[in-house]
Length: 439
Image 1 (tube, one colour):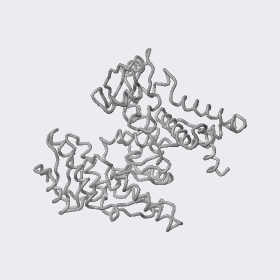
Image 2: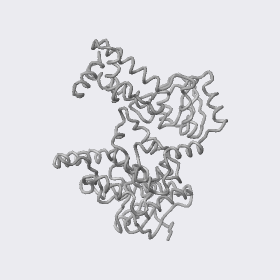
Image 3: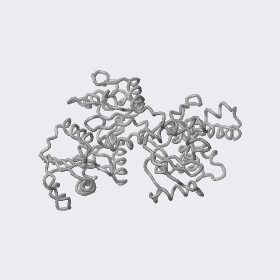
Image 4: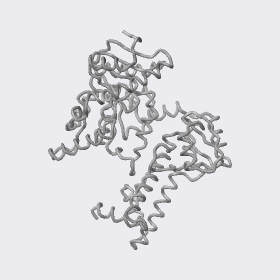
């Protein structure tokens, strides 16, 4: 049954928690929870030294939603509250998620207008906040050993569960299979190789994937697992009739997202007598100003092409003026795919982030060569290893997003080394690398 006569107040929240358990909040939301979870892992691994991989679990949050903006809440008494106003696709995915987990829905509450949508969204957020108080993390979180790979894979596919990132009815880029797996029942696994922001792995693709699909898919908080577990999931998926090969998935995606001539002409015009200033991130410490997250491009004449922001966004304008001062800004609003295509085609018109990254490493190698009095090819290999690569020849830049991430990593390492040796940060970075490389 569907009942829209729900009082969106604190008394209702108290009643909901009195009648059932909230199964859908995010227990990992606070920094305190993050630190506590890390301590649990550390203590567990110290106690059981033979264990290699562990997972943090919640006793109550059986569907730990993504942080901050829940699309729905489900209680153990069968109450479903959602704010999928006029979004039947998202609602269908929520229903499928609950069905695959064998949850019964006894009553549903949902908004009927734009105004109610905002009220429901705020109400869901308050439920999350109440849950964090009702289920203290010290009592709720616990650590267990990750199941053996075969058991883990078998459990993921039970009850007809589908691996959406390999499903022929979906539109997912094939390269996401190297680092993540998203299931219809809400499970969201990410390779441990991509858990860090800095380094040679393109971890930003995980965050961009999540940000772009947040409005269309509803899934649990990400859980890190070994790379071999991710590989095994896709190997198992080949056995099902819904599976699509990586090549066919990319062909389907390109066909669906093929830019029209209007877009191509628009981009060519953008770079006529203009230079894009956001090839690299304005501030490596702030993901907010990354064009890959904020979805914008700033040009030398003050033109800002943006999918999300405008001149009325005060925080964005403040940072824009900070990093690109003395510009007479004017905005052009575009759809999200325009931003993707701008940076994809940027190397046709000017120096790309990939080229800039390689130049940074070469310059660093020249300095290291003089400092250590070693051959140039040896300096190149050492600099590549310092940046997380196996050697110079192994450097592989996947796209402009990845290149910006790699540049940020280089800036971060230099900044960190400068804190200990302001006059010669490369010397400090070399000492740290040499100490921990086993050479």
